[in-house]
Length: 407
Image (cartoon, rainbow, N blue to C red; front, side):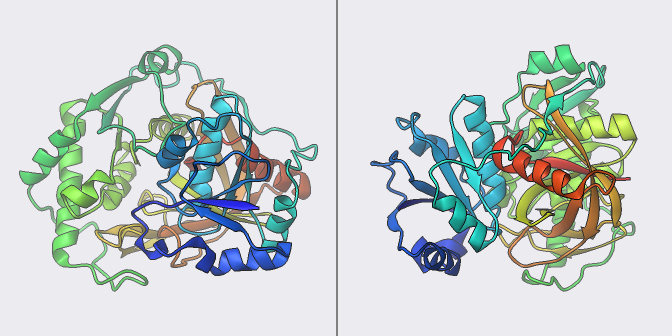
């Protein structure tokens, strides 16, 4: 069985070869054979049973590059429960579905993964109902303006939105704003008083955060708020990873603060996530948490991200940004209980709007800093709900990021 790998340059901790990972060794023991390692050489990819191990997030654009010329191959994406492997695979599978190409995500316990690897075709939905439905909120965002600061991140390969279509279907006006305008605004931004924020703490996993980093994070917030005022924006999405190299900081805290103030704000330049979050605010009058799916364990779904609206959490502290280990990120604690999981697809016509329960707020070191575990809603058959949500995530996702709303 041939194993190909995709790894983002951002994840330096995974520079070693895949065959050294305990995760892969455990799978080999379970299937009773050793993989034929092809690493990142996809020149002969395409045989039945070939596996692509998506080791980290940020690999979606890389996949599209290496997949050129192999469009007839059935894509089997192996994912782990760390380093945004599952989230990246969902974006890749969403793109494949948009192209009418065949693919599946292989994820779960070592036993479950081994069982799936030993078959060439997926188990399918097992009769689970599809959670994707038509979106009925036509013109829900009429008269609202949203800024796209920098282009969408390169890995959001299934998340392209037609601006004219957004205006026609949702009533939303999308405005491109160069990232350089933000960088220039940050240069001239004044430090803000920190009285409304908690003081810095010793991060649980990252290195100590200097006061200067917190001050610079607040300059980014101030600059973003100024841009929102200048363009009369109701919301914005930020190509935030560009800030890692240009400002040596992140937009995590800025977005957490803006959302708490009623300005819809998402990261990675993700336009469908921004529109989804704006729809949530319009329908429910609440902020939403932009999440990556990181791990599925039985009926539990672990979501995470490095920013969360401060008005959603019962408590929070600071840590460094997970992928880069720099800047100021937020670990928040969300209230347990009923919630909703929402996502509008890039076609602006389909969505998922599923009731769930938040059951835990873990804080692990191999994931983005705010982490929540959800289960399917208690008033539906537990097993049907679990399988329906699992089938959606692994076979028909509407992209990577989803929006979680507490109720």
